[in-house]
Image (cartoon, rainbow, N blue to C red; front, side, top):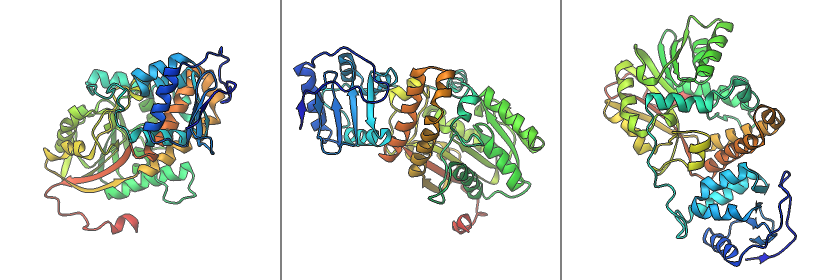
Amino acid sequence: MISQSQPRSTAGGDAPGLPVRRSLGLERLFVEKLYQQIGRPAIQIVLWDGTVIGDRASPIGRAIIHRPRVLRRLLVSPILSFGEAFAANELTIEGDLIQTLVEMNRGLARVATPQFWPTFFSRQVPRNTFAASKRRVHHHYDIGNDFYKLWLDQQLVYTCAYYARQEATLEEAQTAKLDYVCTKLRLKPGERVIEAGCGWGALALHMARHYGVTVQAYNLSKEQVAYARQRAAAEGLSDRVEFVEDDYRNITGECDAFVSVGMLEHVGPESYRTLGEVIGRVLTPEGRGLIHSIGRNIAKPLDPWTVKYIFPGAYAPSLREMMDIFEDGGFSVLDVENLRLHYARTCADWLARYETATDQVRAMFDDNFVRMWRLYLASSSATFLSGDLQLFQVVFARAANNSLPTTRADWYA
C-alpha cells in the first residue's frame, strides 16, 4: 500500500483546474480500506490533493478524484456517482479506459456488497408498459440518426457483431452476424419472417435480399422506422419488407421464422410470458425462432447509472428468466450460444470510432454528453470482458417440430 502526498495531477486531458484541498484522514482511510477489500487491483486512486493510493509498479490506470464531494457521493451510491462524476469531469481516468474499468469490475466482483455501502441494487425493475416503452425508446434511439452514423458501421447495426475472423473489420463482423442469424434460422426462399425490434432495418433488408424471404419488422422508434423505410425504397425492397412503427405486443399475422435481435433488453421480465404468447400465436407449427439479447449469469437489475442516463427501463435477463418466454408457449430451446467476447470487441470498435468523432458529437450536444457516452461504450466493453454481462443467442421451435436438422453441421458448412 502506498499512500503519500504529491503535487496534484491535472493529467487526463481536460481535468478541471480546481483548488487544492488536503484530503481528510477519514476519507483517505476509506479509500485505502476499499482498495484492500477489492484485492489491491493494478490501478492507482489519486485524491484531490495529490494523495496516491495504490501500488506504483506499472498501474493499468489511475482514477483521479478532483473534488471531495465526489468521494462522499461514492459512499452513498458508488456506481451512479462514479458515472455522474466522470460525465461532469469531476473524476477522470488516466491510461487505457476499458482495461482500467475491467480491473475495477473484477475487484468489485470480489465484494458484492462491501460492508460500508448500502445495497444499491435492491430496487424494483421498472415496468415497460406500452407508453413507458415508447417513451424510453425515444430517449435512446431518437436522439438523431446523424449521431449514430458517426460511430456505427455503414448499415447502422447497433447490436453485437460476430467476428468469425480475428482480422475482420466492424463492417465485416456485422454482416457476418446478420448471416449467422439467418443461418441459425435456416431461412428458405419464400418464407415469411416477423422481426421484433428491427433497429435501422439492416437485418430485415439482409434477410429479404440474400435469403429471398418476406419480412414484417416492428419497431417503436419513429426515426429508425423512417430511415429503414427510406433505405428499403432506395434498394428496391419495399415489396418484400414492411417496417411497422408499433409495439411487439401488437404483432399479428403468421410467420415461418420469428427473430428478435437486441429488443429483449427493453421488454422487462414481467412481460416475457406476453412475448411468448405473441410468438405462440404467429409462429407456424414447423416454424422456428431466435432471440438475441444481452444477459447475465445471475438475475439482477442493470446498474443505476446506465438505467438513468442511457437505457431507461432496460433489463438484461438470466437464462433462467428467459425461459419464461418459452415454457408456457410449448417451445423447445434447441441451442444457446454465448457471444460475450464478441460484444466486448464490438463495443471497443464502437468506442474507437466514437473517439475520432468527439468534435462532431460535442457540436451536436455538449462536453458532458461526450464524456457520458465515452463511459457508456467503454464500460460496456469492460463489463463483457469481466463477465458481468453475457450475450445470449437462443434458438427455439415448437416442441413437436421434428423437421429440423439434428446437428449444427449446416451452420458451419
